Length: 176
Image 1 (cartoon, rainbow, N blue to C red):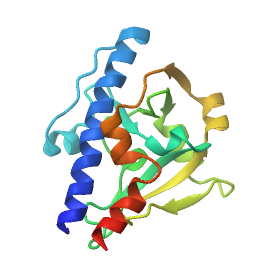
Image 2 (spheres, rainbow, N blue to C red):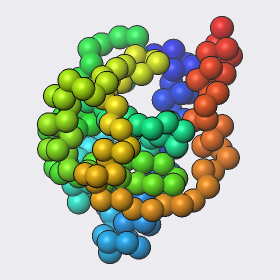
Image 3 (cartoon, rainbow, N blue to C red):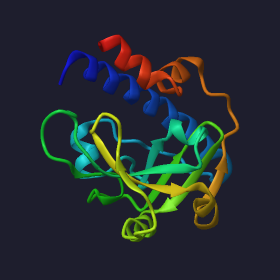
Image 4 (spheres, one colour):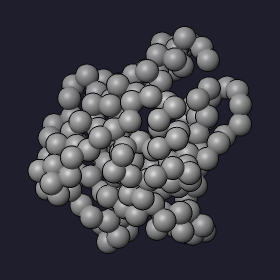
């Protein structure tokens, strides 16, 4: 992995970890659930992202598009190695997939998302770095099949700088 790719990965990881704390607060507030996130790669692979079986995903782009990015495969190094099952296809304790931004969180059943992945009407694609493959779930459909938890917080400026609409273009320009 190039130093630039590593920096990008680390930045996204920090954003996701911050978002987990926001989601944990919202789930405690609205559903009285105390979240216990696993912190090591070993535990995440053996158990799952949380002891409660809820995987949390920060989808910054969903704040400005009509879709949610439902990851099905990933690779750590965007330049090497095969794509491996991830997100909704990881074999762990996850039963609920909580995805969103600083406005809204959609909590969806993992098995429902696995069925939707087979829907030929939904768009399937790779991300810009080649490190992730997903299908795009229209938020209008998500609104019908998910439990919705309002977040209603401003996106922190440091996260907007990393994930904002010009962030990928600026990253590519800086590495050119």
